[in-house]
Image 1 (cartoon, rainbow, N blue to C red):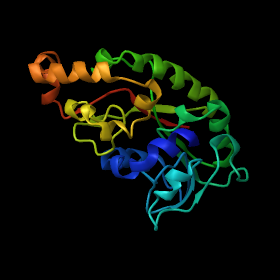
Image 2: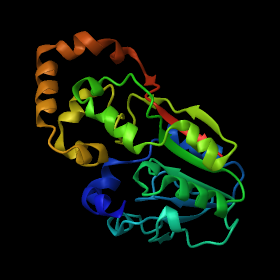
Image 3: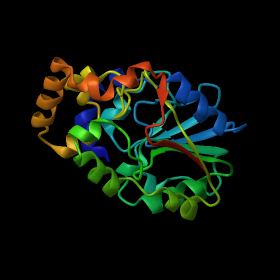
Length: 242
């Protein structure tokens, strides 16, 4: 994970600001935990300020972007957590599992060091319904390759609960589907620079040209205009709690 985020993480903290509505779901799932481990912590998004947080992050670039008052960060990987069994009341991992080299090992490590809930924000690769895949069908192939199927979480963390995470139309966290009601944002190279999927897919200029053309001509609005009347949508993001 560190190599890609040492590259794409340059403006990450600025473009990937935690959305308070998503944060509320994550923090509620942590329950009454006082000590929390955040794995794949990045610049510190979604870390609760009313708990004692320890962050684990493999990328030095991401660690450098953490606020001066953020939780202490250890450079390490999910697969080899440097903590004793049951060291934390709860643990969390936000939009990071798909970057791990051994997802099962990483999640078993979270379970090992956590006495209480393990809270994972992830994406269901079986989900269909995001209009951007009409322009970039490669996204489906990529997600199927990198995102664990949802039934695997029950094997790694058993038992688990899984809940959909609705994405608000004005989501402040610029992950892949955050701009579902703001299609023009995908034409901004700066916005795209903080979305790892686009880096992994390489040259997508033909798709962006087609999207720009459809926005100018009104074709996008004809096909997807009903979305402009919707405040939030299920776009496949899931909160897994083990």
